[in-house]
Amino acid sequence: MKGLLLIISFTTSLVGFTQINDAHLWTGAGLSYGISKKLSVGYETQTRFYNNASSLRVYMNQIGASYKIVKGVKVGMDYRYSRKKKDYYFVNENRIMLNAAYGYKVKNINTKFTARVRYQHSFDRLSTINQTITPKKSNLFRLKLQAKFKYPDFKRIQPFIGYEYFKSLDNEPIAFAVNKYRIMAGLFLDLPFKHEVKLNYIYQGSNGSTPIVDHIYAILYTYNIGSKSVEKFKKL
Image 1 (cartoon, rainbow, N blue to C red):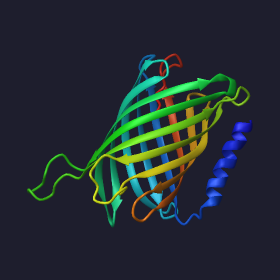
Image 2: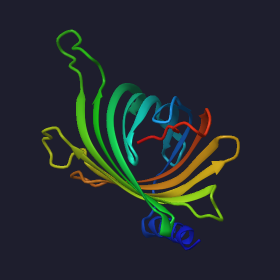
Image 3: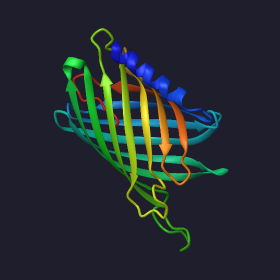
Image 4: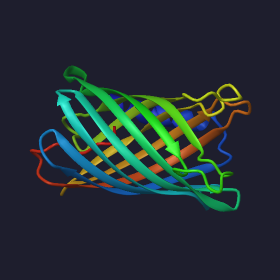
């Protein structure tokens, strides 16, 4: 119970510490399917809004797979297709993500710690058009650390906190041009009949020449297909 109160206090402090000029809202729904005890696949669709949640900024579809190598160690791959708003129109983005994660449970404090590394390659098209329009590509390294708490008396409510760092692998003309970080806190709601809801707040900052702070509120729903004896797909 102390951990749950700590998460609520931490989230409130983040929101109160910064003035919210533009709140973002992410909503999404997904399916999770365990093929075996080690292999699982998943699908997710999301819409992301800005301008105090009044304007659509991104809509996307994503598929992925994860495989448990040994206890606590997973690898996975995801593909995402997005339409992102640029000025007054939407542009395409394809994204391929390679993931590796390690999780460790500390039973005496009912906490699971997870570290995930990700290589991310994004591009808008595969080939040059009319010898003038070349593909726009980017490569990122991402590191995510998360702690999730699970209490015997509140098994279906699992608070978590996390941090994620983004580092460009391209030769950017401006130092830290695409680098950013995220500080997050929220709740996993493990509902009956294989339903799950994730509620979280994300404080996102960029380290560019003009620093930008985004305040993101997210609600994501997942339905888990298959029995409990097989691996549940989790985004790494």
